[in-house]
Image (cartoon, rainbow, N blue to C red; front, side, top):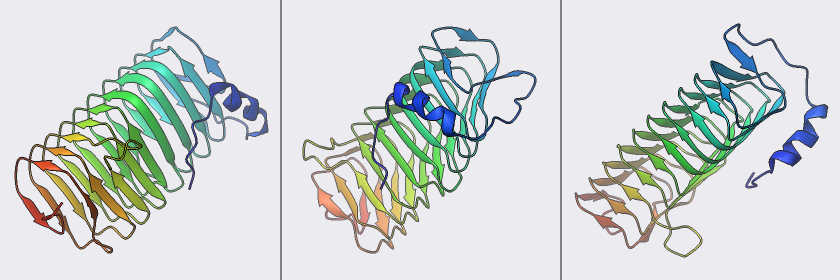
Length: 234
């Protein structure tokens, strides 16, 4: 499983080995290298096969990451959405996204920490979504991931759904390595086919688990609503 935070410098060193950029739309800025602490008046497009580094950058539009591309961002402010296309690698360290985040294509891996997302965060059919010490104000959907996902120390303020995932799913553990999460709404964990751990989370709504094989393990969760199905004892 890919589990590595890659520095911007390492990303830029790899850029020369990637494919040529495809053209950006007229209102967007194409990124195939570094953009520093400046304001981009429109959106940013990372063309297919290119590597983009955003460091302290303010983007007034949306960011789209193309197929086979990579985005390494630190301390960004994004007024629009983040849309991650197929077979892309994304690493986000600190930042604010006023819109939503979507990673909905096969081969995509997203690693994020210390991130604030005002909208919805959705991963569907991606390889990996790892999220640490972050805040998501909207709903949170993790569906049909292939390799696994890790969620530690987050505040998820909408409803959360973890369904149909094939790899390991860790939703808090309470073991010092992975802190529990605060999940304000209802939490649904269903139809997952990898090892699933649910530990030391604060749940504001119901915690409902069914049709997971194997059944989830864990404990120490504090649930204000009902504990249902396979999570009745967690």
